[in-house]
Image (cartoon, rainbow, N blue to C red):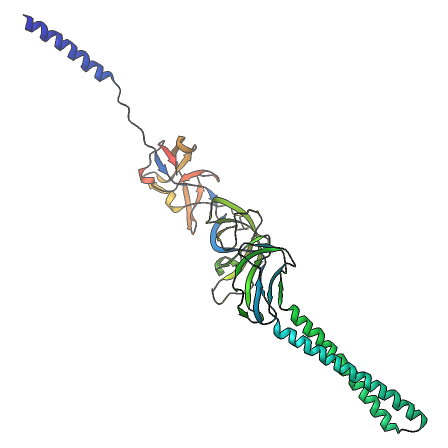
Length: 362
């Protein structure tokens, strides 16, 4: 009897427990399917192309001495800011100074000869006027004086030239700027025109790059572009095309162009790798033909269709939309009915999408 009572009580609690578990809802986490999409545009609309280049300041000056000699002073360091006229380096100038001193001696000698010839001419003129000298003697004295004067003038010019040669042994900053590189050392023997440093003198940043012939005719001077730098993540800068070469560069088989960044930023430095975004627009849009990527168009028993994307972010849904297509172009299928410019459509995975399905935009 006691056993039956215990069995009934146990069965009662077991039934209650089973009922409670049955009523407990099991919630499953819904994972939204990511979907790639694009906006519907006209045929011949914006076409974006990216090309790589290298940033540099708008004015790069190779610094060099104008005479040869041994470097005795070099006041240049990487990143050093300089002002126009600052003394950056000097040479020993031994040969230039010796030549200058020699030219001074030559000038003094020729000046003495000129004065002697002048006295001789005056004396000969007096004798000629008194009839004590012949005309040929007088003309000879005049020629000697002219020769002495010419020699003296030549010696004076030589002194000025040798004085400049001494100045050529001093290197001054030609513009305000920053020292970008130094390629010489004190006590090094350098020759005229040999680069001893590089000065970045410009304030604006330019990007040099080459474009293929397929797009060069769409590029014009003063055309606006966008620039991004590998070293500066997630940020783009406004820029403008300043130079377009009319001829092909034989070394690269491209047309060189120059782009100037109009946004100033101290993080942009010469030598940085840059990507320039060009948006080419076809000016002939008279047909207003809508075009969609070929991957966005599907087909079932009712005909061709696309999936419209409605909403944003995690609240987006796809809606099946029938369309009538035309010719296949390089940009995709022409659409004659069913779509409007600006609508969003899914561009991948159409076979796994369902009408009204919630998705996540990718």
